[in-house]
Image (cartoon, rainbow, N blue to C red; front, side, top):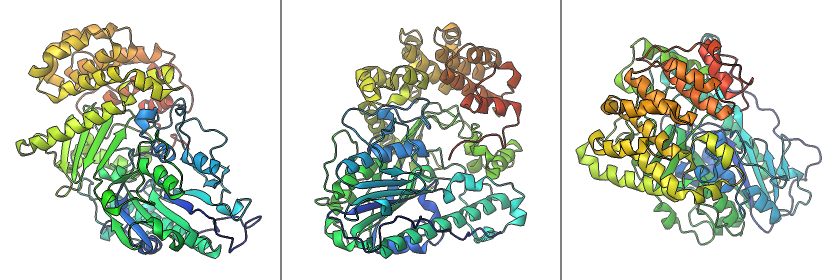
Length: 624
């Protein structure tokens, strides 16, 4: 079967506004969103990508943004920011598919709702995937039939968003036997693999197959532009094409590397409204733009005020200078829970310098996430690691990380050479470290409080909750940052933190000990006292440190914590630690699935139990 598929007719024909509808007095906006692809798969942005003639034609009549970023490498978190113009960790939206939807703060409404209140017809076809509680006023129509043609008055301006799953990671969940029976349009032998991948036929086939999927997205872009032209609306409409975050081969989606965050963005500028854009059509904009900026930009193009509650700034529209935008050079990245997999990571990119801060560095990137490992290439990569058949660059994904990493992207675009310990770059490291710390405290970043507490206490008003606890959150960040110094310099502060009255100070102190590992061995006794801590999440962190030292077997304590709570989030956090030890490359602590009490079907906890049982492949299903 050919990988390029014949496209079915995209939109219904019944009850549609006829072509050549009257022009609105405000610009229309269309967002064409491809799921799970970074900029690296399009030749327009990367020499190793595929040709995308329709997107390239869009660029010839618009602006190519060469440095556009999602702030999160997964859809629900990224889309929550697209809708709100806000950093997800400030609004309590940072966990993928939140256990409890968060309430938005007073004065902040989703972009589509604001446009709708201003007289726009708003339609979505049809993926939403928000982590906040949506009101009925969010869209005029959000369904598989959502379309600008369904607006009741042809003179109404419209905002239309359409998402396309042809590039979603599920498109690579194929049985590896397919490599023998189904050819790809792109030649696997001709693709250029990143150096962190093993060069195998399966990886080459997977990469080529994904390039085929990007060509399908390009066809959809062409079909959509043809519809706008047919309707006489093309020169009244700003058309944004972008990826909803990076992905989707291993080490991209779910991770704060450039492959997870750096997205393609092209904005076609209509003839009627080109006076709103301080750039020539067909030009490039090298300034940094992020998803926090998309909603403010659309509101500004529509002539509407940008709410003060939004974190972003417009990058197009009246009065927006191309030179000012070109000077923007900073983007923040964040990663928290992704399905059942937890890891707190933050990133800051300034120009071509990238700083990654791993707050739980003992967790390898490769830590089990069932949905990820449904991809055959993921499983092959892990098999090759277990067999000792990988080079040093290819092994990094499976090994513990440094708490902080510094990359020079100009010379190291694949983020492999950590310069954090290089004396020649000490000043840059300290500069980036301080800038990230300041940013996280200013939000304040709710990721430093465990999810079970946020679900229990914060979701009715996460922003207010964060403001009321800004000083406490700053103290948690300072405690976590003790791991950045030699142990001798942090020991006294760590001892004090381990004995703190604050549960979350104790929680982070134990996590810091795990990051130090053997260097903090003399703290084993005070940490051992935390095995009886009144808070189960503190006990989990204590178990991790002591088991890494070889002081205890983690299985009994983690099973007891999991079975001893009725809180589903506490179970999930404890099971995360169990999964870490279950397949730890240097420790042999396999968990018995039958040791755990029954958990709800379809839950994250069940995914972990299936993993322990060894029958998780093919049973891990979830919505796209």
